[in-house]
Image (cartoon, rainbow, N blue to C red; front, side):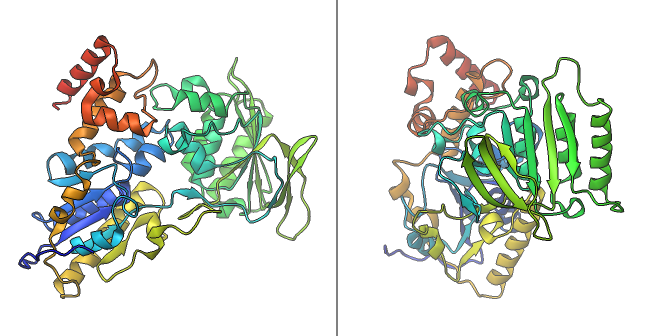
Length: 446
């Protein structure tokens, strides 16, 4: 552990936030309002900011991603420092960060899909919905492996918003990705065959399902989707049941399919709990029981997408170093705190956490006076990607995108860092491309 000279306590803390997704950025935003002159540093293991917004929000939901614009002001105008390409726990010891800063906020999220707690035969194609969306968003951690081809018949296990994200993406046509930042190679790999059948299996009955009605309507709005539902109970009068009944009626009347659209049969099965996934000559079979424990109809598909939540570590690996991130000056927020949800939920929780921290500072529970980022600057200088560096990569991605896309994400970490540090010269792009990038930088005022 390094030693340092303490600053004189002034009632203004130095704050380290680990993770630059919505929870971390909202914490920085509220901390800046609470302490206008506080030193706030955001550490991020990737060379790019925004975490879940960049890689976890479905690529066809560009409206949701516009929240990035308000976070840009944090790093451009409000003197919050972005330290990208620095992984706390690998490049920096967490104890050293906790020693250097008065307050440390863990906003690292839950990066892995929760695994099914049932028997799954070897050879079955099973993919987490979180990984699927990350791949479609060009997450660099998946570059080394090509992923799986899902095939035309897919089972989606779960009935929350992430499950419906997966369903919508799987039954989307090319036109539905217009203006998105989808990674086209990943999209082609995952959907190498045209989707024709999606079975959505959820333990909950329709009134207790966790998906928003707007998400269901988005699925139904896809040009080829035919929505039906099983397990609806007579007498249920909630909004989801009514909407599903109306969609099923429209399907029966043939009203949902536009002329020329590829048909995708989407069947919601409520009150169904999978018990095993088996590999057979027919394909992948999902065996399940109902609420009474009776076996239900076996679903035969080509692959399974799971959307049953997220976890902090990947099954089969040692517990992560951040499992031991503790201390009187350490706080957790968002998914890392076991909460999470939609982006507005992250905002509310970040505000509440900063208020909690402010009370602890006010009553003296947290001693102030740590040296802050100056203590660690020399150790991160060589590898760190600053916000102005990220802007070069941002401009490059915008200038080199293909037709019908708003951005082409760079997916190789070494290439990302090279472009961030040196611009287009770092990867030897043609001169005309370099000129487009430079124009994009000038237009953005960079």
